[in-house]
Image (cartoon, rainbow, N blue to C red):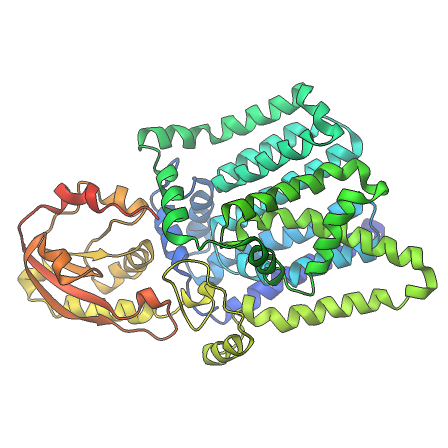
Length: 513
């Protein structure tokens, strides 16, 4: 009965997509090392719905609001959707492979190469704006493949919708827009610039992002400041060779030959000539990474599904051409991808005890440094899941030790959106007071509401707080285990007798990064 409804390729893609979902869901059933720092912030954003935020547009918080209202805020509840989105991207990767002319084996290669990459495991292992951005990148690629295959300009309309929703997920999908135009310009597909559907599609995308642009205007274009500061203060300058090596490692050295072959195939194979613009589009994306010297290999993660698809097609075509001489290659390639994925799975999935992972990662020297001033024994995407329980218990003790008259007047200053978010998440049940922070959207939420006679201040130095309060007492530090270095031994102060209203200096201590 199943075979009547679906062909072999459909059954394969459904099976692999479900597998991709399960490898993300199962570790999170056991806690997944805890909430990631950004998840606290996204939960806070979901409770403050708006047309925009300092560091991202509005779609992800809106979706998360629905999750919180229906499934709750547990780890497995908020990480179920990322797993489903990851499975959908794997399915689309297989469908693109089929559209390019690939058979069942080609689809399996493309999908398994995606899943085996630590990039895939990490991105879809927790809730973030990146899952939606990558989904809409992949959907845009799918419509581009269909467009180039059929020469039907109506696909520009669908691409415009996907691109606009992608912009409402994360502004950096604009890189794909630049790459699309570059790929069209250097090929015969530049003819689409004269197509009305092309411009209608981009107009639709503009209308979809317009509410966010209006919000940006009335709030002083905060995202532009955020991106500028992130480039200056967070990103680590990365030379071209290291950029290539980071992409190879991030997508698994075993999977990377598939996308490298796929890129070459798109650029040189005659039977893929109609899809040549796709190759130039990805080349443009990689060139942007090299020129910007970004230390974040995930910036162009959304570009990989289409070249993995092309790689699967090219490998299958080579094996077919070799006939009996390369018959053994099919099981060999599949086995190699599976083994490669298993070897690097601990880098992308929370499956090892942290102490074991720390030793394993140190031994293999596979702990990448993505941002300035942030170090840990574990990769950053794991390190920022640890020690939030220690932070909460420490702050709760500090607050409970205050005299009753101070407790009634106190608020808490948190040094980052993660610290503020976790305090807001658990604070009501623990009886903690209001939380303020100068970081990203918390700066906007706290504007005009930052004054207090008693402040529990986390971070900074005693001298910093003496600019605002005449009495500043050090009451300890926040200890840590596997957390990122900047969160360990962070000082805690009790500040009393304000000399300058916090509201008066709020704009000066704004922290967009």
